[in-house]
Image (cartoon, rainbow, N blue to C red; front, side, top):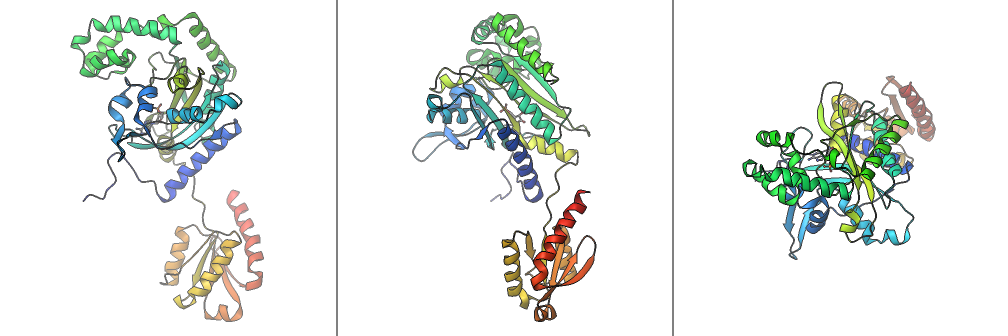
Length: 430
Ligand code: AMP
């Protein structure tokens, strides 16, 4: 029996888990400030949902999904992304019949893709994302891009690269797909098996092919920009103008097509290289989707969204040595002998109820080992007591930063701690 983690997954424990919470909390808070509300949808969905939305021609559906039959013979998939589930939930709840438009959702949670694990690429990974649904306005596209850009800035990535492209509207896509089919049909016999399938399911995906011989053919393929309808071109130009006005720098990347089939219109991606040179690929990306709601049985409305990979944000922060410090404990209780454990339990319970963060050393051992434990938890004060203190209704309070110790009367303890912990906090913030 092998008890290590499943390949491509990783444990997030102790200080690292609080770094995740910290980053996720910032993202959630910023999204709330932009009028988004949290959505929590199931991790398991009917497989058909992703075939319909992410698309049968996408690598995700073709190769990467964790799909299984449950005991009721249902065809179930662990979600590979969250847009489909969130939009499905909006359609199911009939939010478009009653709510004001747009419906704005943010979400955070795990996703699953059977990919080859490597730097920044896991089989279970976490995403934070937003969906702004029920609108086809360019302003909303720009608002979502600005939210993503601003969130990265608030987390501390101020030199991100925003890559942007347009996939055009339905008319543009139909024309472009036909042009691709015409072009690749002439070469498909010599191309890889994946491409042979892609030309049938979604010829756009051939552009992503990593096989060197195929890339030579891809290089001369028709370019999307020559097949954009007038309307699609105008929308894209207007989008870029608004970004300029908001002083959000971008690079147009005509090869950016993204791996999910539901995008139409603007698509974008953020990349960032850490000051130490670490590059984890794209931090996040998204785009406009025109037909997703209708595909999922909803009204003929459009939407726009993005998702960040939390693991990637964290690994950059770690590489730049900027992971937030874990909050230390306020208090560490040290009964001088195990026989005072019950007194310690009573005291620590009272202190916790008063709002102090506190741990007690019920495990005995030497006083110096107790101090080491307190230090490892970055405790601010040690409360030490033995026979004498208990008899006198006092406790020894040691300031672990200033290394000063004072005997404090029991009934004055709370006031004393209150006052001195505020001092400590100010001291820390200096
Ligand atoms: P996508 O849903 O493919 O548009 O991906 C959005 C973001 O999720 C990417 O930019 C990555 O930051 C993150 N992401 C996607 N796949 C993985 C993965 N296998 N491991 C870690 N992060 C991922």
